[in-house]
Amino acid sequence: MTALSLRNSTSLCYWISVLLLLLILVQMLTSLVVFGGEFICSREAAISPFHFCLIQHGEKSCDVWKQPGPDIKRDTFRTVIILSLYAPLVLVAFALLSTLLAAYSRSRALLWLSAALQTASSLLILTGVIAFVALNHSYLSWENLTIWFYICSGVHFELGFAAALTCVSADKMRPAQV
Image (cartoon, rainbow, N blue to C red; front, side, top):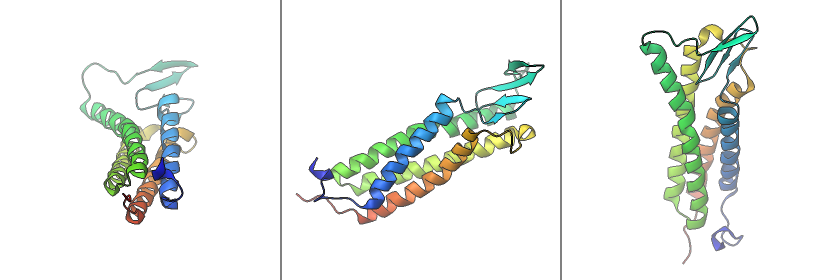
């Protein structure tokens, strides 16, 4: 615990990036896991990375795009969307862990690892959002997009900001005194 004491304090940028990573993790868990990533919800359709549901005459029929025979374009897009949106959950958790371990061990390498994981997560989320929009562009309108879509889109920018703060705190970190 001496690494976290006031005598051996870390910069304010470091603690802001830790809090930002916690906020990002909670946002991603809420939007992608708790609410299943339902990004489009309208009178005609409810669409998430895993499900495509059409609503006709008050009845919901899901996975209507499962047609006989493979559709390579749609299946590729769905795979890219799922991997690009859900892999950052794990990467952000590891980024948070390495950031917290860096406070204890005073290791700049762990902070640079965290910044790399945050940057990779940011790019993956951007890829997933773009692929989701490209696949479901016919159902896309401002009023049909849910708050969970906007949160995932905002997480991309939050991760970029957190990565920049982590890089700044890595530059300011003093090595542990023996």
